[in-house]
Amino acid sequence: MDLFSSILEQPINLLPYDGEVNYFGEIFSSDENDYYFDLLLNIIDWRCDKAVVFGNIIETKRKVAWYAEEAFSYTYSNMTKTALLFTPELLSFKALVEEHTGETYNACLLNLYHTGEEGMAWHSDGEKDLKDLGAIASLSFGVERKFAFKHKQSKEVISLPLKAGSLLVMKGLTQQYWLHRLPPSKLVKDARINLTFRTIDNS
View 1 (spheres, rainbow, N blue to C red):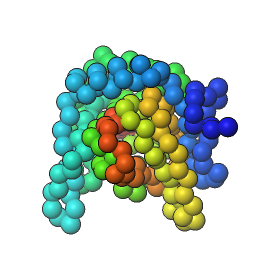
View 2 (cartoon, rainbow, N blue to C red):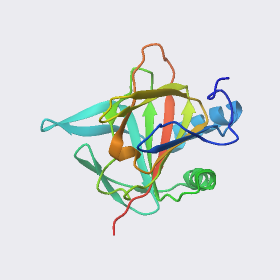
View 3 (cartoon, one colour):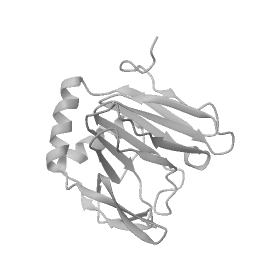
């Protein structure tokens, strides 16, 4: 049986040790996926992402947006962004994700990958602005993409297809022990939108 082919009665923990990644499968139907993808494409203030690499500012083809309950500042890749306030639509997504995961979130980083040639390199989400051991919930809309985890010491790799309309949650010690990435693929021609709900701790 394909564990990733349909809605799951209980989420699957994908990691064998040193963390917890719960995959809930598709929590939206195909029609809902198409509707919300188009909605997010049009209502979100998308901007090209920027990063500092070897002292130089580079701009990615991938676009991003940063929203939150208040105008939090968030620093990653040596660049600081200030959040826009949640839209009503993003608040609805947040409430749904909180209901499924039993966690709470106050911010959302959104990514727009135009084709499979745009991806994300191995990394972990350990920025100082994030709540220590806080959960990060990822909603996927648009085309299906492969997603992978790699243990920092053992180098064991675990991969899965992130279905359109699916929910995945990283929690516990995951960021300390595992890297994750969205590998590029020339075979994927369509776009994907990813919403990553997280908790900023500015105390």
